[in-house]
Length: 415
Image 1 (cartoon, helix red, strand yellow):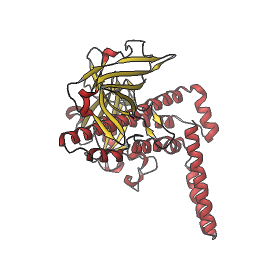
Image 2 (cartoon, rainbow, N blue to C red; image 1 turned 90 degrees about the horizontal axis):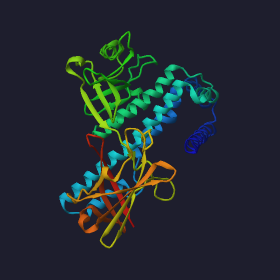
Image 3 (cartoon, rainbow, N blue to C red; image 1 turned 30 degrees about the vertical axis):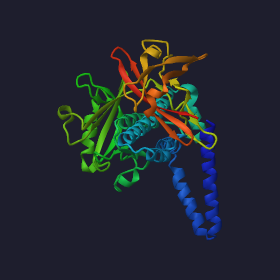
Image 4 (tube, one colour; image 1 turned 45 degrees about the vertical axis):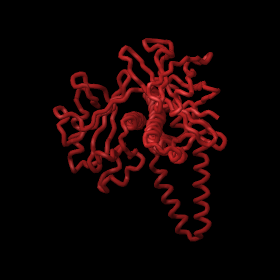
């Protein structure tokens, strides 16, 4: 919590300094009055959504935009690739960088969606005196609509997770809605949460469930009145209720080991033609990067994993955190074992190594995975750069009766 408090205290100090500088530099009364008017206009918009946007939504997407490795930094990859003349090797490294970027962002969005889910449940149940805290700090009485706003961000992040997983180009539009909202619209209208570049579509994301007949995500506000997806699609097709340019509705549904996303548009009969876009992504069982953040010293960002090369032996250690709600040894989903996983190497196809797992005492959520392989067999997956050796690998996890395959790109560094 110190991170959040420090960030916004410093933001307040910065704005105060800027305002003081403006008032001191321009001695006339006009600028002082204008600053007062602008500030009062913002203060009048005192509803919880303002704080969700300023305090949570914007920092999330800014971090997602700039999230990077402590070593090597993204800018250093171009220098690394220059050292390789072979097209195949350069292509392998570029493909690995892309997979690694996608995976780190998936971990980050999934972690935040889980946090927002818990926050929504706390607000909805009223437990933990969370509503009273909000009222005492912001002098606001939180309403059901504001609770829905928290759920909206959770849905938005789940949709982002699926889009990132499938390599879809999108923009988090919920933090910059004004440019596409028609002037005649009232303050209650929103232009959408996400913008899909390939589809040229603004998408308003909703939370729903899988329809048992169609297998597609759907939703209703009131099951008895059947008010939901069909009515909303009709509304956005009406020019008098225009929300934005080419508007669609995204519905996310979470079931079992997957997150489903369907994008519906008003120019398709969705019950017959189905959605414009239909995607699903497997949820991660554990994280191996978000639990390893470097925030001190010269290199700040996501830490690489550790590798040791001694003679012909390469030993690689991966730190992990189980993000499932159940304990790693409880329920139907048993803990991860060495039989469930193997380490592969993108530059040396055909080499596969089984690993061993060590549990942290007193904390069944944290564990490490250790692998050992003959370094001479994986030489194409080891990169020399800056006096260090960078190991590229892929952790393949097979889970469940169907042996679902999850792939974790692993970057390890040996000094």
